[in-house]
Length: 300
Image (spheres, rainbow, N blue to C red):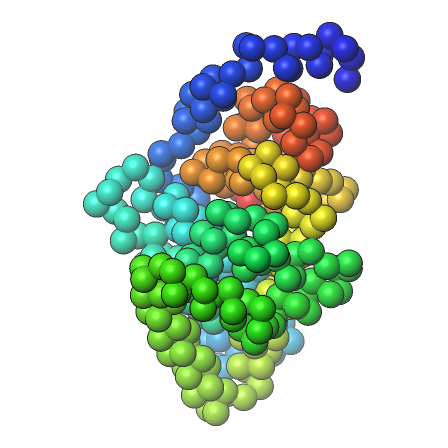
């Protein structure tokens, strides 16, 4: 970057008020794309069960289809956690939890449980004392991150963190209690299903959710945050790996989400293009590498 460019990016023209005004232009709509993804991936997942049980397709093919469809199970819940599925429509807020929970069934997780913990992640990103994602994010290798993301429910450090939040925040505790009951119901359902269809449950549900959970721990947590500091403009990076963005659900540009979580996932590329000068001026990690035009902009 030239000295003249640096002067421009650091000039008073790039005020915080101007940044917020530009960002607001990308907020408030109903993210219908995520609703379509939620029901499509869940329908495919259910259809695969039917086709395998009726011997229409072999189990190994069902496994690979289930693996792909399950990889899209978290995105709609994440959108619902941030209110993207209802947009600015207060009367539609129920859509966020309803669609979010249906979408999470292949991952066997509670939407409310993930939401309340994810909000703490946003409030305290990269804080070892307060960020629930810290212990599988700030690790030395992909392999370690892929394993640790499965141990969140049994990690004593996270358990202590959650208990501290429960002691200080009654609403947080209520959400944890409600989410835990849903989680228990899903686990019991999985156990009953395994009793009647052991191999199908293993290859169509258990293995895909384990593999995709590891994948999510890498692209949603470790790559955007590993080794970074605490702070709104320093806790998330723009990164590249040479693969098309849809293979990582566009997590290369997760930096935009932590800057303005109310901007819908599918609007982030255009928002980055508009806010790129502000991101560079604030020396956000990797901002210098953000292209002026975000290319290859598929649905995810």
